[in-house]
Image (cartoon, rainbow, N blue to C red; front, side, top):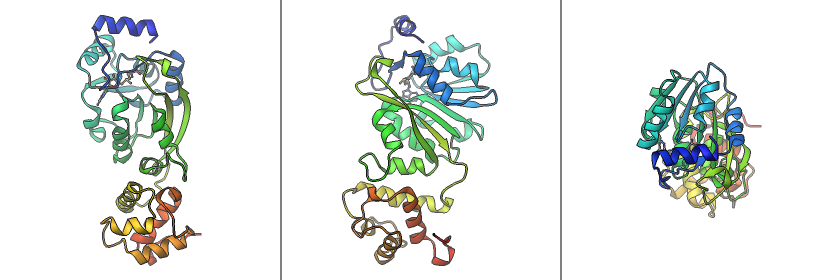
Length: 287
Ligand code: SAM
């Protein structure tokens, strides 16, 4: 939808965009096309769109995907979308909160997500999708620049965080494009970026170790300036977190004794989890 279309639709609805619901509507057709192209859609694909708004992306998604499930929280927008697209058989419009939407029940085993995410909930929503057993196979998301930086961060940078590691445990994350504030109506206070998350073909960690991995990473990044050997044993992680085993494992990983959360790569976090949780005989050989 163009700027003029968007203004006209908002006037028709007498809708003042809600900041709480992150209603910054995309008015740049080039960015909309770029987002949809990055989803690499085929006629057999089912797409989940979170927060379709006035339908700027929905229209293009319907042209390319086999089925679109769109979840919109705002009652007036849901009614507008029903009127605009009501006749399209391949669209399932859900009026509800994406934070409570049951992906596992509603979506097929393989699906993609395309969304210009409402800023206030982008991190919890991302966490939900990344942690769900029914993970999307590809996500193309427009998010705040700062969130994009965290998703794609490298070790030893300020953006490297628990969100980075939880995402990169399952997804290859790439920043596709920066998006200027002027591409939205109303203009948000910060810039955005389009990120593409591609599900890794094989799990990087044994499913039984995911929980201890996450507990440990979360605890470590809560005190990111402190040394791991000081923080982790005091974090109430359970019997598997023993100070002497931790020291020995960090040494085997080749990290300095002073290592902090942000200094370990994902591969090192995975090795550390295995070293601490698995008995020595069950660990795969490290090289
Ligand atoms: N997709 C549209 C576009 O690109 O122009 C709108 C994007 S706007 C940034 C975010 C949309 O998400 C709004 O339509 C807003 O009402 C909706 N929204 C906000 N919170 C939501 C939630 N918890 N569940 C579902 N939709 C939500």
